[in-house]
Length: 330
Image 1: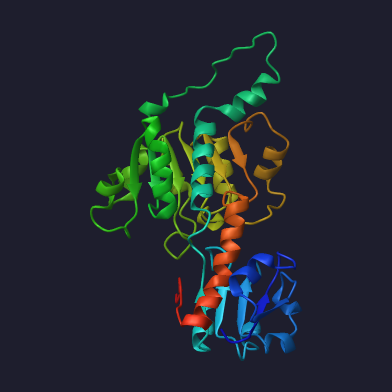
Image 2 (image 1 turned 90 degrees about the horizontal axis):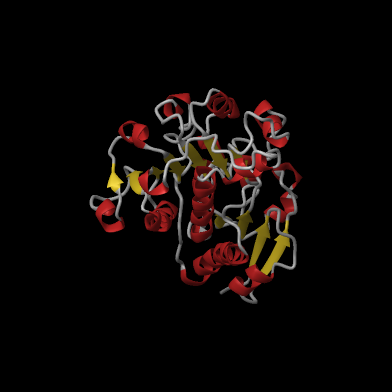
């Protein structure tokens, strides 16, 4: 591979041992060190052959200086903060890394579903106050083998979740218009061609769909009102598929659903929304019914290495072999 100059936007500071392992000796790495593209030095941007992006929003304001750059790679899956049109217009390839952390996200979704269904967090909170009435069966709880799980998006992670939930005897349903015919027979779930037909049957529902024009704000009051009042909603996919925290707050407060488990939020970190305040202060109406994780479902030591290595290896593969892996055009 010819010698290349690679920029890394933010988040992961030097020495970049993982990236260097993937790229080999013929790469110079420059750390741009900012979440905000307006802080990038145009002189450095003009030198780059490739750019690896963590969380920085990349717009035409950066792309116009990428005069030598041939490829931009996003650490991770989501790319809603990347200006694909301008990259395409400038002949710059864009790729992501969709095939890391599959096990970890599926494990996290499974844990959230099981924890909420078995009321683990709720009873943990309640037991702090129970004395002497130690045992308290105050909430209806369905035997897991009698429950139905709906999976929205049956790709890598949705499939991995199905495989984890099968041994519990859960009735598993799925909605994913992009999977080929017979996919449900190979994996083993009941397939629905209409999400609205599936929702009323769900005791549990887990979202594993990408963020696009069809899915942004899909978790709205119209969807939630179609679920059973004792249902549980889990989102480990993309934060903005939840229309707003207002919607979730109303659904929980009015007991339209019983509980929710979120690894991602519409805004991260969350602001001072009333639902977040109620969750932080463990208000009685919400206790144990809402679990929030700080966008960590993907994380393990292994997945962290895997994501970084694959992002850098995508760059190496392009310059060394002319192979463009996981290219995104729209």
